[in-house]
Image (cartoon, rainbow, N blue to C red):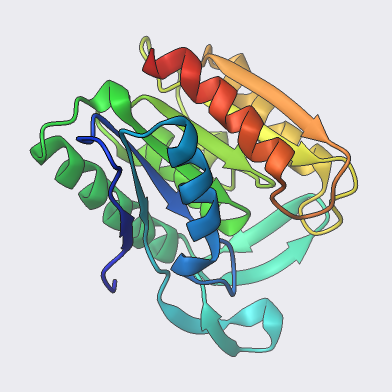
Length: 216
């Protein structure tokens, strides 16, 4: 994986959010989001890694930035290459460990991901990491591996945000992931907005409100 985009804060960093883009996107795409969050949290480090470029089966084998290959899809399911998502999650785990080595406590490290990036975040937080972190933020996404998630006494809290009009990852698909974690006792929050498959300023502000509860 290439070097991530890193936005260091104006103050000494005491928290970090690692943000994963979606299918076909680039690490710089969410730079405005990072800058917007840092206006509210001037000691927040923003890290955005880049997905590798690979053929994507459902897109006719076209090569594009992708955290994992999608083999088949329907409105409520995805068949994915699980080796790919494991590899992506271990890369994210390495970024989490880097922040720990910089002196940040796990409770002040957050993962956020949009669409395919959000699926990697959920896989990382609930299937790969060996200890809870500050939170997992799942945006317009789904949980392709959460059916095998087992309840944990102290799990990472999760924020789900989805668009009512999303026709790429439909709202019920995202709700399935939220319900699964809730059933397992994870502290979960759900927000939905009248939007498509996108990230809006209102959504980012809602993320800020949720972060503020954990960074005070």
